[in-house]
Each structure stands twice: as C-alpha cells, then as structure tokens.
Image (cartoon, rainbow, N blue to C red; front, side, top):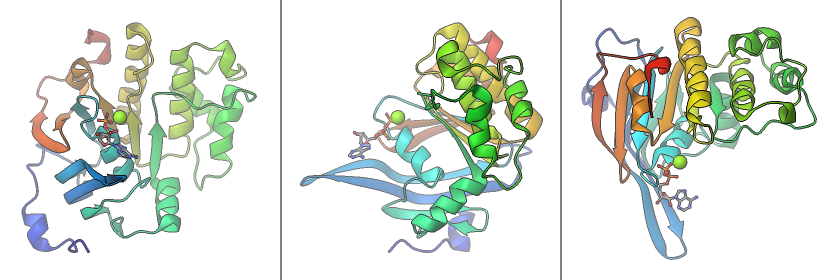
Length: 254
Ligand code: ADP
Ligand code: MG
C-alpha cells in the first residue's frame, strides 16, 4: 500500500513558481504500471508534482512518454499503482469509483483531442447537457460566448469546423465552473490557425475565470504560452521551467 502523505513528503516539495497560488494537486512518488499479458509497462515512474491554483501549465513530452496517463490520474479517471495523490483535502490515492466520479463532477473539466459532441444536438444543447446536472453552472450562452461562439449557439456540430467544435467542447467543459481544466492534445486534430484560436480560448479562461489549466502536448511551440513547462520523458518528469517570457497564442508559430 502506498505510504500516506506525510509532512516529510511535503518538505520534499518540488520548487514552486514565484508568487504561486496554493498547491491544489500534490503528487508524490506516483507510478502507474499496466499489465499487458505477462509484461509490465511502466507508464509513469516516481512522479513528484505540485499544481498551483490559477496556473497555466503545459506538460510536454513525446508520444508514449506518459502524458495521458498522468492526466488521467489528475482527473480522477485512473489511480496510481504506487505513490500518493491529493487534490486539496481529497485523498485520491485510495478513492473508489463513486468518490472519483464525484471528484470529477465537482472539480474537473476535460478537453480531449476529439470533441465528443452529440451530433443530433445544437451547440447550446451540448452545453446544456452538462449545466443541467451541475451544482452551480454558468449560463450556457455565456459559456459559448466566452469561447467566441455566441452567434453560433443553434448550430449543429456538422455545421461547424473542427476548431469551432473544439470550442463547443471547451464551453461544455467550463460551463460547470470546474476548478481545473485538463486538456489532452486539444489542438492535436486542428490546423495551425484554428489551433491558435483554441489556445487563445484556454488562455482567456485561465486569465478571466482563474481556472487552473493543464495542457498536454507534444508540440513544444505551445509551451511558450505557459506559466510553467513540465517536461516528461519515459514516465519521468525530467525538467520543470518557469516561463519568464510568456507569449500570447497569437504569437506562437509551429
Ligand atoms: P502519451 O500520452 O505521452 O502518448 P500514454 O500515457 O498514453 O503516453 O502512454 C504511456 C505508456 O503507457 C505507453 O508506453 C503506452 O503504450 C502505455 N499505456 C498507456 N495506456 C495503456 C493501457 N491502457 N494499457 C497498456 N499500456 C498502456
Ligand atoms: Mg496521450
């Protein structure tokens, strides 16, 4: 059984950014091993990580380096095979399915590479699916306006470009007012110009709503917009950089 989070583990905290908010996630010694028949695949190995309230962090690494595994653990879709993970006062390390579901519902918004919109529902209706079951949702029209689609609320997914569909997916993710937005390759299926618009929307949400945003990418150019860049390689965090010269997504080229 993984050791409980002790004050000694707290003392070993990785360096924190200047003027950071409080840590919301605290991971210590997190590992995730998959069993493939008789072979063990170590997707994550001994990860120590704090994520701070209100930060925009980019997790950068090659394909297969463990980024999605880490994001799934942060988002309560998976649990570590070793180590500890806390979100504020929630111990996610030993949480069961019901507790993880509640954690996700109350605190986490997800954005994936593919938008997973319901084709038979309009943009507004796709967002309403979430706001109807949320405790303190945003007005769905406001969420769509925030992503620049206030004039497209009655359009169906098939009537929208990939970038617009991704922005509907982002509106859906933020409409429940999550504390943290976890994005796994959000621009992975988009061309450069469209991808930049999506990144601008994520940056705006972080700035204006104060939502902690973590973006996973294998595109190093995107990292330039982050407060902090976390490099992942072969299941390890190999480097952490505080970005002194953040650039707006509009200035990013790839
Ligand atoms: P990334 O998102 O950086 O591309 P992943 O976290 O998806 O990397 O995967 C990390 C490693 O774990 C890879 O070697 C991958 O093949 C393996 N892996 C991921 N998910 C599973 C799974 N469900 N079963 C077995 N192996 C997996
Ligand atoms: Mg991945």
